[in-house]
Amino acid sequence: MSPALSPQPLTDDELVARIIAVIAQTTHKPVEAFQPDSTFEALGIDSLDGIQILFALEQEFDISIPDDEAKKIRAVPDVLAGVKQLLAAKHA
Amino acid sequence: MRRVAVTGLGVVSAIGQGVAAFRDSLMAGRSGITAIEQIDVSKLKFRHGAEVKNFSWGDDRERVLYDRFALMAGAAAEEALAQAELPADRTAVVTGSCLGGNHFEDQSFRELYGEQRTRFNPLTIPRIMENAPASLISMKWGFRGPAYTVASACSSSNHAIGQAFWMVRGGVVDAAVCGGSDATFSLGILRAWEAMRVVSPDTCRPFCAGRPGMILGEGAGMLVLEEWDRAVARGATIYGEICGFGMSADAHHITQPSGAGAVQAMRSALADGGVAAEAVGYINAHGTGTTANDPVECQAIRQVFGSSNPAISSTKSMHGHTLGAAGAIEAVATLEAMKEGFLPPTANFTTQDPECPGDIIAHDARLVPVEYALSNSFAFGGLNAVLLLRTAR
Image (cartoon, rainbow over all chains, first blue to last red; front, top):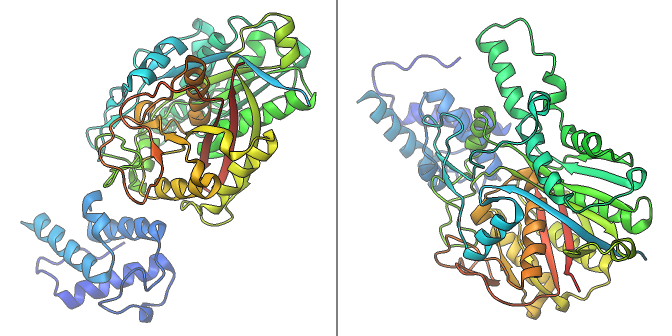
């Protein structure tokens, strides 16, 4: 189980670390393979990996990522921006 | 080589229960995509599907014995067999299904896990088994030849029709009832499709720029195949001819099509029928309306047909993607349209995606006589099945 989210917003660095951990676990790649600016294409992540990553992120952060937003996600920074926005909306 | 006549057609779909209503909808380019009413979908990301409204078939006992997908197959078979006089021992039954009796499975598992029920209905197994339609048809009409069911996801019923065709052509049997059915609208199945993020929130726009995805459908299609000379000798109405069948595997990816497999299956169907690519005037495309399928399929068609540029449409824009029934419903659509001298359109069309090259029939049916057509089915898992159809003459 994921740890409960603290009431304090996570920093970008903390979020990126958790996002990379989720993506690494889902794609069976070492965390070291990822950088904060990695693109999915460069990492060899295809559309099937992509929907599994979205599913894992929804579970990790207890959020729901709309399909329209999901289509725009191509890289770790896209994930960070999207997750931040959804977390902010959730805690608003 | 024996020729194979189609001497019966039957269909249950969102755009018509029965071939006459189905044909009228195809001709009019009328979509059957509406709000899903069978179950509560208010918590899903999508709310629209191509449902068969007010479906009812079978006597009291049959409605107890069979789940919705098998009853739909029974209804389509009954229509297809209306004028049949088939040799019981020499008639095969081959059906396709992707989902089997998922309505009853969904209900049973909800009772098991959700309500902690400790007893299952004793008909659970016969209701959920994928071969229930083949068994229903063989028992109800007494066909004692080879009978089985093919499961290859969205290619299931094209594989079923193709194998039945080969059995009749090769002399294993003299006739066959073949096709497929699926009843898609149970909550578990819809949730599973939702998770794949390929279902459109509103409608299905194959080959269009910015297309929003596929629309799920349900239904059944059935064909009666008969050795040509036998059909002629008994004065049967001949709705068309199956001339060739091609299969291939992408050997590539569980959800992404390769294109090469589609090319190989189309070429195999043409070679099997001994028909040149230039003779084909129409392709009923797999045309799911997803980001992944449509460009790969259009480019594969271009590779096979080059400058002969056959007309292409996706009737899924009207009857939805009926999964294991897709090939059968689309074979009925193609044969019936060719017989009536038109080519069915792609409904809901906006602007053609430049990545989907080809002569797409948009909005309105074309009143064009065509002798040969292909009907494509390309399944998840890279399993491809293509039928080569010919208008009756």
